[in-house]
Image 1 (cartoon, rainbow, N blue to C red):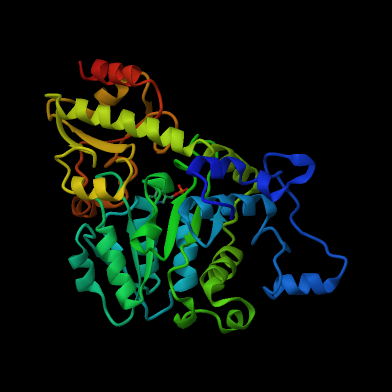
Image 2: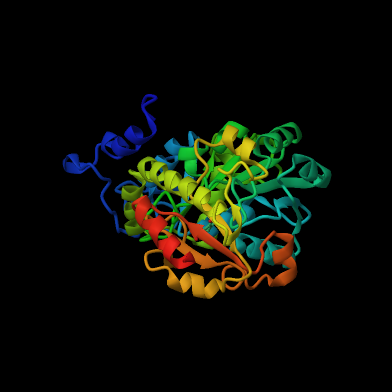
Length: 411
Ligand SMILES: *Cc1c(COP(=O)(O)O)cnc(C)c1O
């Protein structure tokens, strides 16, 4: 890691400072599946975690490593592991660190597929409690002797609830519980979970970090704050091979990435890496657009409700202001009962009807019918998702064009 340069400067020069061949400014795309060594001892040492290097690309690749280093710098962390998708990062992290008999507390406001995989883990016998994490008190009340992990998101999707991030961090530190924060919605540009004592940070690189809707990826970053040496689920063999601070990452890389196989392709790593160079610029623009649109929607007679942390009407507005640099680019709206939700969406000419978020383009989706459809009405109600809710991921288009498109659709 170099000096304390600014967020964007650090990213722009990250590859170059590792001296790629020919003075390349980007880490090249290495497609070799396997790596050969003249001295077999080198290969053995890599297998035994005694030496850094590459053996088989499922668990490590130079192009992917360069991206991992970038994410580590963005998050001000210790080390990062990249995955094929955000979901691969989440599922591998849980699988690598949690065992039968352990208990996990998770926010009840979670990305739909995260909620779904957690349910699959419950079906496999894992004990997971879902609580309203906007209050640390609720989380505290669920903690038991066997609670090993607390899992929350920064700004929940689609109703934008914000977890009581700082207080939960204190709780986890006090009790020695692994604190996992999914930072996808805020990105390390708006918020660094290490600042609220997170142990591990998840990012879906598919979203804002890659930023252009052209590559899938995910990551988990160790902030260096959790004491892995005393964590009972670490494989004994690793304790003799790596430094105590690297035990968590070693366990996730081997038991999570290597064994489950959710490997990020080097081509995707390159696309995400290039996309990440403009993260700060894109976030600034998208957040500015989002706030202006949220204010427009809140003042519009045909909009019943706006969910956006940047509005004073948002229940955690004040906390969001303290924690985050800006309020993000995701919001949800509910239309007046007199308007047909699908007809409104079909009138949008610029805004794309699509399920992604964190793209450069503004995207809209009716939530209950699509991304949260499988959950059924009861769980949706529990998560604060109404039938007429439309989720918007605001992009970096010119604001006037976006305003015009929404005005036309409401007109
Ligand atoms: C999209 C998303 C994920 C999953 O990421 P993928 O790259 O799509 O697998 C996880 N968490 C949050 C908050 C997300 O928005």
